[in-house]
Image (tube, rainbow, N blue to C red; front, side, top):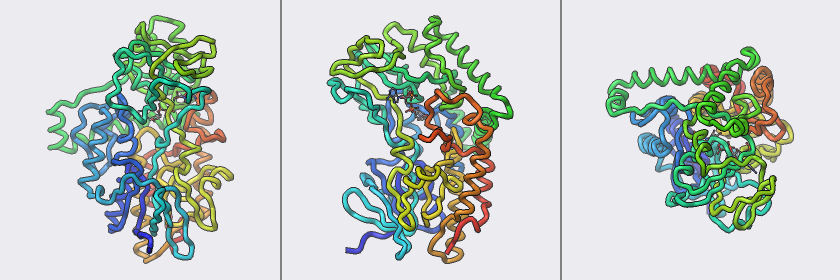
Amino acid sequence: MPSEHHDAVIVGAGFAGIGAAIQLKRLGYENIVILEREDDLGGTWYVNHYPGLAVDVPTTTYSYYFEPNPNWSRLFTPGPEIKQYADHVADKYDVRRHIRYNTVVEGARWDEDASLWRIALRDGATVSARFLLTATGFLSQPKVPEIAGIETFEGKVIHTTEWEDDFDAAGKRIAVIGTGATAVQLIPELAKRAADLTVYQRTPIWVVPKIDVRFGERAKRLFARVPVTQRVIRWLTDSIYEVMVSVAVRHYGTFRGRFNISAADLSKIHRFATIRDKDLRRRLTPDYDFGCKRPTFSNGYYRAFTKPHVHLQDAGIARIEADGIVGNDGGKNVVDTLVLATGFDLWEANFPAVEIIGRDGRNLGKWWRETRFQAYQGVSMPYFPNYLSLASPYAFLGLNFFNTMEYQMRLMDRLFSEVKRRGATTFEVTEQANTAFLDRMTELLGESLFTMGNCATARSYYFNPAGEPTLLRPSSTESAIKEASEFPLSDYQIV
Ligand code: NAP
């Protein structure tokens, strides 16, 4: 039986996969399929639905450039509205019919003779495609901590990515492991109902106050009727974030970390204003620079620790037993529910999320590890023809995923238009262009927070296992978009 063939296969139906499909459709490709392992679209915004979930950058900036949403209810919109937005975009741009759910991709191999990708699915089927785009996201492989005895725990275990909506914290003795951005949102919600809540902190997180506003019906009507008003607000919030990332992260050296110090001071004031117990404040204070790992906004996180039934445990976990957790201090905490807010495996399980074998048998995961993590313009690697990896090293612009998507869609536009114009069959980035891009990224990172700041104790996923900060692209949104729209076409071999 001949295997199914498409012009393009996209892996993942989150915002990256939806954006890629929209761009391909604009370019005239209709024979495309999006393979999605879940049973619905939206990626992280479908998978995550724990209490307290909200976007942690202003939602005014959190949409595709071409599809502003006048209906956000708040500046920091709750998660379900973002899932609704994903649904709306998929419907409006006719993407939904291309998605195949419950379809797990095992791997993809470039067939040099046929000049196409052969994609193996878990159910044993094979799909072939001229172009392959992986849009598997950065935060998509949940991490279960390797703690002695965790498998022996007899109570309820919930990872935040597998929240049970009917779980009622009322009266429960709960342990939360982890104090990342997810835990910061979840802990105040659990604290409202749990009988007892212990938070196991390994690394404290920087938390600053959240200045949230509600968008009433009048504001929403204004955004819908006079779209320029929303554009202006977006420009404003985009600019504020752009300046923040530029000053605090990319040009840390130039500004001698002043912004980071001020932000850390703000967090300190926030702790001081909320928590009376000096020792508790000290234990919640990070010892690395603000920005080394993703900082968070919350008005309820520090306050939760002031409640008598909420405890901070920072002595470390010795082991987990059937009915509770034994700390490194020897004390045992009997709990009935274990919440794993332990985040995601960003590097080992995710770069790449599925096995990709390119030309001459080059294995992408191995090659990244044996050489360095690298990707021209955050999407292309030599020896991987007709392939774009949207969740690559140096892809993410930081803070707002949609800015990243915008430059990647423009790059697709330029590249695929040229492929079409020349009637070509393959494109592949040249070794030279890839090396020049990697050298430039490495140089730009030289004056960044990650190189010059004090990040050693942050345990930040911005750093790969070799200790290099290869996740964020150290350039402004504007320059990334400009490069994606104007890169020399000779950077690719288009045959
Ligand atoms: P995370 O930031 O990686 O945090 C995981 C937490 O679990 C950390 O505190 C980590 O401690 C702890 N942990 C992991 N393994 C452990 C172990 N074996 N023992 C003890 N502690 C352990 O993950 P996350 O909180 O899920 O957030 C991930 C990212 O998702 C965020 O950075 C953010 O970009 C995104 N996010 C966004 C939103 C939003 O926009 N609304 C909301 C939530 C999350 P260490 O720090 O010591 O490793």
